[in-house]
Image (cartoon, rainbow, N blue to C red; front, top):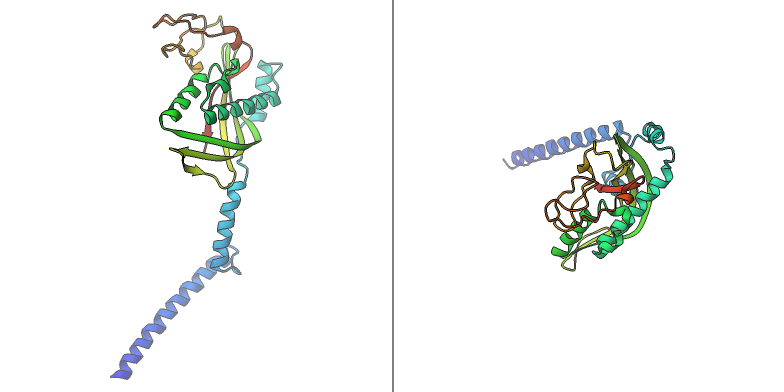
Length: 254
């Protein structure tokens, strides 16, 4: 009786071990198939973690159609300089980061920001209302590419994809809620506009996102000097919008 119980128990154990062995051999065969035959699960786990750490430090790739679009842009703008437009993007993003860090719109008070200043001001107000602080340290730009280009009569828009890195910290109520222990590798898309002739109104002015600085009502014409709603001065310096590239939007591409 006892021998029968012991024999049955041993049979179960042996059967279990056989199943484990078969599973192990199956996993090994799969690993061999994909070139992992000499590696243990521990070493694979370690390599996976190392790969994840490496991914955090690897520069983001930028996608675009620079080679295709650049000749078209240069036909429309004989003085277009690719390097200068990339430097403008870098300068603009640095200024925007400083404005958000310090919650101070004065960092983007130059004329080149007058089409995006309202958006940044709204972001600053939101940060202040929610007691949130951003911090961008040791910013380094890597690559740029032209993503798109459109010309609508006398207004042209261009989108630039940019890869960059920085140390990032986000705090709420003086407590860290997001902090990178290594440099964040990221991408931004920046949109710029070029107004060739403000006397032509056959384009969609809404792409400029212009609003009255007094009441926030939309500005429907570049010739509009006073708000149609509150009658206040719109304070748009038309001359500063002409014949130069202006940033009108930016976003981080996760």
